[in-house]
Image (cartoon, rainbow, N blue to C red; front, side, top):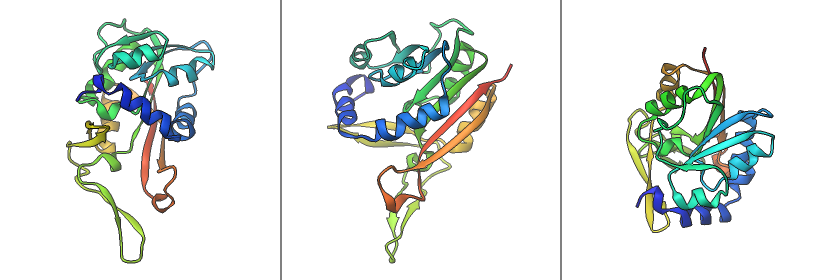
Length: 222
């Protein structure tokens, strides 16, 4: 099953899990810091909650979303399209862009950074919030030693593999890249890293030392 068919599952996940509002959205706003009057692009806009959060801060936001039902649910300006294709947008037309819990579902991360670099103006910003590469590595998992301490099995961290995670009665694909792969891909498309934040799982105290989310903000070099 593809993301275009998972709208009911995703909306149910958001309704039942407070992590998005309590952790993901505050982390995103901390890293992105939208400016009043800015014109931004939401890449993988889902049900439009990040569009709403940014718009409430005085910015204009346009969304790109693969799932037609979620695009309609957002009740705002959203184009139904598959990332990383942004050829339908003019070059240098946005002050910035952001991508929340979507990049790990895009096959070609290098094409993503290049495409966003074309449509964002020079010195524009890009923010990405994603599941941490330590978590998405094939074969990675928590393990508990004989003393009860929770450690993390790194799995195939340096591979470019995939994992399939449950999504209702189906699964969704996570494309894994190491942190170095991500940063180098962004750099090769002219993105200079300004901030990187790592966060543990929001409600598992025993995993407080294990990264769960990765947030980055880049600036497009002139």
